Length: 442
Image (cartoon, rainbow, N blue to C red; front, side):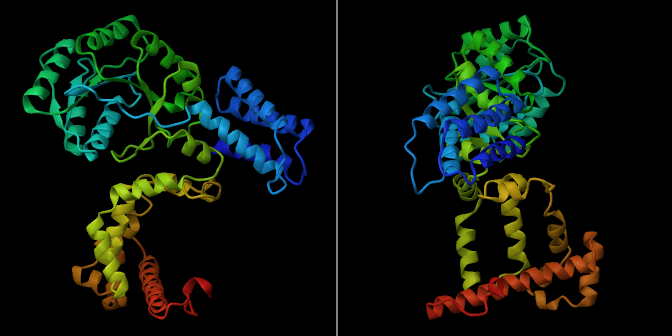
């Protein structure tokens, strides 16, 4: 996410490295590179210039702190302006009516249907009942796609396959939700390959008929400045409440995320970071700014972990750790918990310093599949008793998982190292001191 922009901003700040003070000359040199980095990221030129001018004015009036380097001060200034540019704080979904109604809008291919499912799952975790409604009466298989999505996230589903009037379908869906006592309705509307009068008129009529609590505009972040232009056109017609940026896990330069709030004056409410239903984040400007500047995002990482890790399972594992009984069955459970948290490279980018380290590393979304396959190729007894894994069994596991014996040996070694570390930590806890031969201290 924003790798190129992060790299160029880092290069700009290096010009202040080793300099004792901030002055007009080194500020100008640094901010020239910052502006170029923003424009290269497809940020509107006018916005980039205003951004740099604001940072420059604040930098020139800055009281130089002896304990903080000029480079660190400039990073702080740029960070604060990035936060302000993207909206300062997270903006929640506002559902006032019963049922609360959310109307989705956007071009075809922007990810409306997938996001509708992600949002349904997000709201269900907060205790909401959700009815997903199919109002795309034009695109082949659109109804079936939304039905599949609703089944995946466990939401209710409403459609009228023989009705070609999306206004009627939307009104009937809301009535259906009232009858069933469902408190939230998400309406997935039709998109087009480009903005046209018919499309805008139709979604306008749906809005007028149902008076939704929230109108969300869904846009593909990879389209950059085009995304902002499309948002402006939709906002003029719909006066939507918020923006959803999808595909932020792809080759996005960041222009949409950095420009859209300023140009449309509407908040970014959510970002999609993958195809999985779990790959959805509430948009926090401050957290996004820290990630753009290569500082990671530990808060979001912890929140994802809290959402996916089962509390009872965590307590069970803690007991096993204390008894040094961690086995491959537990290992498999941990792998599946990590997979639920989202794209591996995205998760690593949330760890401070890891984003830069992972810049040129290709981490596949299914990077753990070979490990999972090896464990699944073991019998239940072998998973619970790894000491059973002799050469013959390891060869069988390698063949069954499509890996090599060396891969299996490495996996067994990993488990043994984890068990050794747990044993040492248990000794430390009992004696109240750090043991001497810690594996990571050798």
